[in-house]
Image 1 (cartoon, helix red, strand yellow):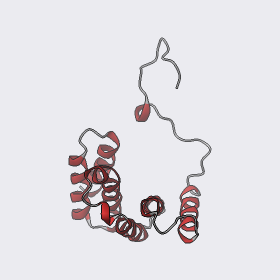
Image 2 (image 1 turned 180 degrees about the horizontal axis):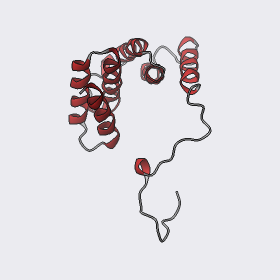
Image 3 (image 1 turned 90 degrees about the horizontal axis):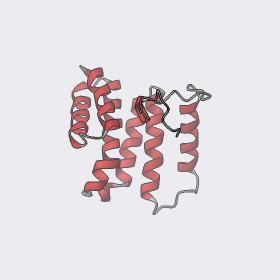
Image 4 (image 1 turned 45 degrees about the vertical axis):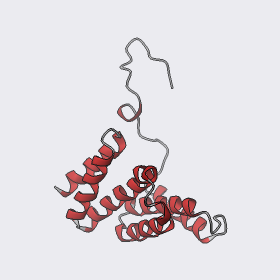
Length: 147
């Protein structure tokens, strides 16, 4: 991070981030899907590492959404939720990873045309984390899409 200059507006993070140059946006999701599939089908994740498996499934679901495959994303999200079903009552889990599942599912539902479910999930996520900028931005995108 650079020091503020004389004309610096002090903005950081989302407000001042530039696009990530050098990334081939069309190939990046395909690479993520391939890498996640390789990890899930390989022996890198042990059977007891359910949280790690859920993270990989969630990453692949997000990549499926980027490639316009919401049905595959929903399948991965369901599998990820099943991996961490024992954490369902943990409020810290629900406010973090559980909420990310809901937001990804909301995006998938919007893409499949289930606008009512998408709006419900997005609204609930926004209510659960009213001061989390990324959650509010993602929820807003979904709610605008289904309006």
